[in-house]
Length: 610
Image (tube, rainbow, N blue to C red):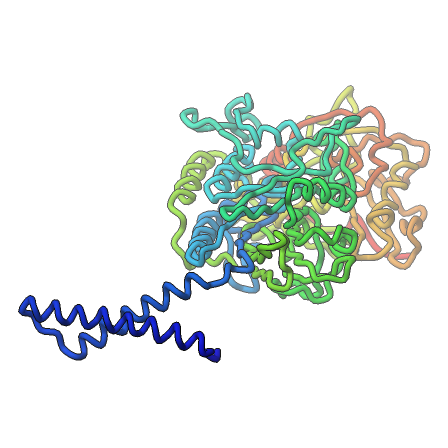
């Protein structure tokens, strides 16, 4: 910067004062009998000169134009307190995840932001609980909520899996309290430590688009506003998957209405703006699919619902923290005003955390999107585990051990796999269907089911063993939902319609959407080349080895999720004389015990042809 004459005069004046002070100091030192070197005098002059200049600079220094706020986000944790195993336990080959490691990474990231003078907030985009490993599920996911409390989570949107045990139970997750579940009945135990009852979530659940039927009241608050130390406000809108009623048990959402995500969020923008909020972030439990799933810090060729949702959301919404699809991505997508908008997702199971540096314009209070940056960071396992989280996990591991380690049977192969053949039938699907068909709890009035149907999406892992031994913990990993079995009557015509729904509606018409039910007691052939609605080869369906008869009524069994029409199978809702039996995991475990040792059977129930 060029120094003007006026500037040079001020500089000269400050330097003269500095020299005068230095001279006085030298005189005082000598009078006291001391000695001051020329170097010492020069240093003192330089120091005081710099101090004087710095004071003047501070007086004229302009105020910062922007404030930086750190936003940390996770999604789809699914109660994975311990690192997941197999492909679910790494990011591109790097071992990742585990609550004790996640807690440490979050603390370190916050500390780094604090050192830069930045405030921080931690949020989540749904499915923190539900479909959880036994360590959390055995205690109704109370351990996971406790762990998230310790990590400093502040707000979370409600995902579809938060409804796995029903909305009443989800309210308990927020407010606390214990269930009278019989101290371990059905292999679950609420509040196992009597000295420390469950206190509920310290973070706020948000669900702007979930309403009680026939009211204008939402299940949880639709949004929360955080005011930071410099007065900046950021509003967080929580959004639940609109399609939730189609993929959870009907009883879990009975009495609730799920509204469109885009319409709901857009309607809240003016509400937040009236409260002085210009910076708005949506925590959305819906997502997308990058063309390259390994590109977790970009989003090449991203597709899926998130693309249309982003296009429809009000341009006043500055960022979207998404989830549901278990993908990692970090995008800048154009909004409807053709401005870049941040869209992120942090994979699943606590393997990634998204760090966003929100840059907020101090004049407008709005997010400066050009200067807002995001980074998906791998939760590596090369850091020291957070002691409090590690102690929490150790406590519950000791409490769950008697349930988890009980040997319930043996298998003659290292595992029974869920990988399907060309017809989309799998060895593990057959085992589960056989177990449901054999379960005595669904027999009523002397009527025993002759066909079983199991949804492939409910089979969460291969059935693994320890040198052939199968424990309850391994079985639970396969079926973690605690669904009930339901027997019912269906006619031959209804069963035909059901089988066609595997390839049509939400399950078609393209092959990637096909959802072939795993079966027992029934055989048939389907034609991949045939049109949707006509894929099952005429005359190929047999029950108990006999041709299906349209007008005959058959007793069938499935889980309560499918019974309610879940996964795109409304035919089940037309069935009659429904009877609820026991839990699907109990039927599975009991079957393994009764058929010990178990050898996988051939996948010859479903075939493809013309």
